[in-house]
Amino acid sequence: MIVVRDLRVSFGTGNNVVRAVDGVSFEVAAGETFGLVGESGCGKSTILRALCGLNRDWHGRIAIDGTEMTAQRPRQFFKRVQMVFQDPYGSLHPRHTVNTTLTEPLAIHGMDRADVRISEVLDQVGLGAAFRYRYPHQLSGGQRQRLAIARALILEPAVLLLDEPTSALDVSVQAEILNLLVDIREQRHLTCVLVSHDLAVVAHMCDRIAVMNHGRILEVLATGDLESGQPRHPYTEALLLASRGYDRRLADIGETA
Image 1 (tube, rainbow, N blue to C red):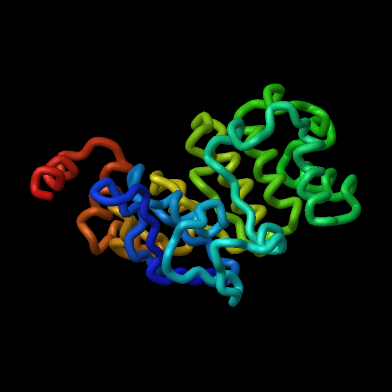
Image 2: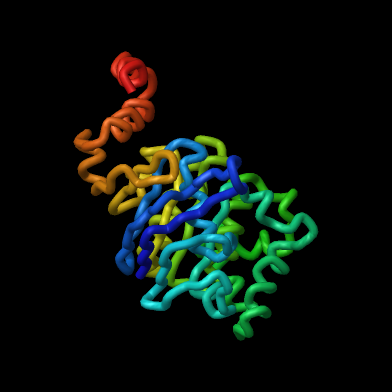
């Protein structure tokens, strides 16, 4: 479903150029959930922005469902590929009700049965009709992220890009949103790319994981390999140790790196 070859994204010019993504390649099969994990600034979110068309200044090859992507994407692309952002409040218009937020993409893409579609998607994300005419400031953080997920789903996409979808939420709400995403992925047979710095989140959702550092993929491993503690690269081992809390071995790795 997704093919990325030698993807490169840079910011700045001359001596100030920063190679945010430096020759990244990977594939995601239809129905698979693929994780991109690494510390902040390693290029994970930049890859998602290139995939979804928000960043047009990239080099390399991107293909979605057999179609080669260019900087300019056709309208139909945005119906097939949707993204859920990290900050649910920042990604929602503060003066648009839930109803307006969900009606707008349907109108843009000329989809009928708006009332039925809105009711169905609100039920699917666990909000329901009672939330239909509320504004974002009247929703909790978890409810806003549910709305953001509903907005992505209402166009019935084939690919869902998830940029740290739970990191801005309270710990008590994170598991609810992750379980919701797992259920939706299975019900709709979605292909997903999940970006996170949290290995527990990635292990919960993903089939395979690419570990990134300084704009490059260091290794790709199956979730089972991660859970059994069998990473091949020292950086992956350091991430795994960090996810478990303080460990003297993590300090030792940092001193010898």
